[in-house]
Length: 222
Image (cartoon, rainbow, N blue to C red; front, side, top):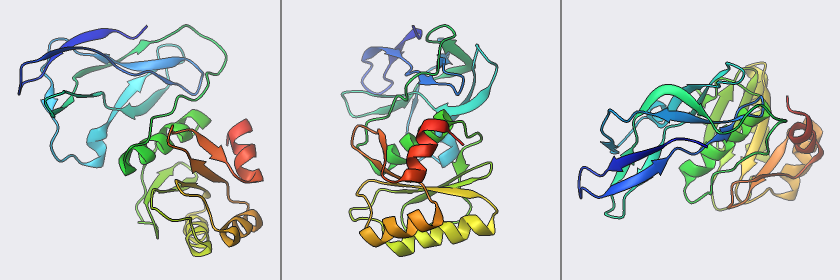
């Protein structure tokens, strides 16, 4: 099991026992960042994208990937970044590929985090913010891939799908679309023609394939 660490809120001085969440490495082993008992938690203010991630090495296969930086919400309303040591704690021994463990979606940032974790679970590496901003939502990029995460309140349009495809083509990359509210019928038809995987993110954070390219990606990976 992941290690636990006593964490004291610097604002209200309340003490919590915290365990970092574990996520499956591409090799299938659940891995959690190793916590640093000798450092104090930091109050979260306005953070850049890179501040939300920490590089962790899987103790089973040696693979290095970026994982969400451990955070803790205190009942007093303070959000804390829990210190890590830079290593990893294995949450289980070597085993077949684990099922994807989603992040419950409450905010747009949760949707982006969940999509990034899902892409990493599929086998994509070096997930980062895309250089170009998409027509709706947030762009993510990996080696050979461009993804769009759309947390807006309406279904994705044909234009959204086509713009993602054109941007990916200009970068000689594949593309994939994640939406919270689904897709217009014309958008699904256009994605099928262009062989673009479409996923819907339900509120549990589980990506649901909505066309054949997405089903193939979910089953077989890149």
